[in-house]
Amino acid sequence: MNAITKKILLVDDNQLFLKMLSQAFKKSGFDCITAESGVEALRILKTNIPDAVLSDYEMPGMNGMQFRQELLADAALKDIPFIFLTHISDNELMVIGLGLQAVDYVLKDTPVNVIVSKLNNIIYTVQKQHEISKNELKKAAEALNVRSIPQTVPLISGFEIDFWHQPYQDIPGGDFIDFIQADERHTFIVLGDIMGKKWMAWFFTFSFLSYVRAAVRFGVLSGDYSVASILHKVNEVICLDDVLKDTLSSLSLVMIDTETQQISYSGAGDLPLLYYNDQKATTKQISSDGLLLGLFPDGKFSEQQINLENNDRLFIFTDGMTDLSAGSGKKSDYNLFTNNLNPLLKYGHNFESLKHELFESSANLRVDDCSIIQIRKTT
Amino acid sequence: MIRIIKDTPGHLLIEIEASEANLDNSDLFKTQVTELLDRHNKNIVIDFNRVEYIDSSFLGALVAILKYAMAHKLEVILTAMRKDVHDLLMLIRLDKVFKIYGDYEQAAAAL
Image 1 (cartoon, helix red, strand yellow):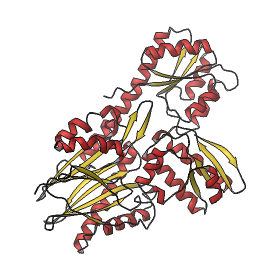
Image 2 (cartoon, rainbow over the protein chains, first blue to last red; image 1 turned 180 degrees about the vertical axis):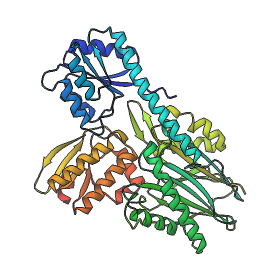
Image 3 (spheres, one colour; image 1 turned 90 degrees about the vertical axis):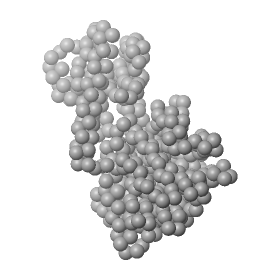
Image 4 (cartoon, rainbow over the protein chains, first blue to last red; image 1 turned 180 degrees about the horizontal axis):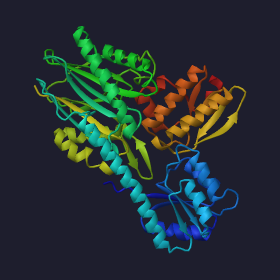
């Protein structure tokens, strides 16, 4: 279970009551935002989504009912649990309010600690329900044997492959990984990131993966091993697919040829790969040219060869590895990630150690799905 | 989510009001900007000066807006980006897709 602070929006024109209630909620561990009117609350909700809204009924200008109606008309806000706070114990009003899908009523003369407990229970119930639905989906996915992340790594002569994946808030998301051993000589390594998070992105991963797998197989069958050509085919189909045409994804496609011991790489809107030269103990970014999949029919994909010497490593990763919570906000910092990785590589930490020392240690700072693949040359 | 700063005959200048442009507000942003494109039928300059962090969901919304605008023969120009945000767009080659300018004056001159 994650220990994310619950956020509540309190709306009341009585400043004193607002202050008292806000202090009580903060004392109980809530992150509390306050608004003195429905209009102010709507302004706050444009940039800040709470776990629940507790609103007074009687307010000058826009009253609680009107405020509730505004929220119901907005797809992004209508499902936030809403509780009316009032000193009116009028049954008729309560019926109207509950008709507006208010989760509950709380009378203002209720002791503050009871109000806090009530809110806590409501948020817990909603989250619990969410958890149950999530587990049902997970079970269904497992039963269907659909996975966007493999369970094992391929064995490739002359190379060692490792990967680490952590879904954001333990909900499957838009990152996907695949290892396709096309024939005895060629293995394709796929790392993609659908733009979006959680379930919505996760559902699309299977469509993208299917197209990538098909393009690789058709390519190999026709003797086309070019990773840029494969990306081009995948992109063309996605741009024509009515369901996927508004869904974008980054993709890194790497092919290892065991005969030549060479790696070829093409990328679509992906983060630069990181190449570690063991002899020189230096890291270098390897950037590709291609645009995000699904953006334009001509994705401008190019291809490059990467030669690893013994013990050199190549890292392929998604933006979850470089995006972190920082102080009051979040930041995206590719260089910080490489600067943290560099010293560990210099001291020869293996992938298992990198996981413990770096990837898993900042779990509470993660803001997105995290995926990283390491390719190490072993001969 | 957004605020109209300037409405000229040729374009609208809008500002993103959130400091974190992410999954929570990306759909709302897409809806609001698409509505502006429909209602005004003008090019749009988006001011990013308040945005400190942008995630992939929001970038997806931004690209969807660009594609929508292009289908209507309109332009979407990005301006006043902080270095971190601009660096990220460059890393994933979105600087090749969007016109990005340092400030509004440069953006307006390019339209």
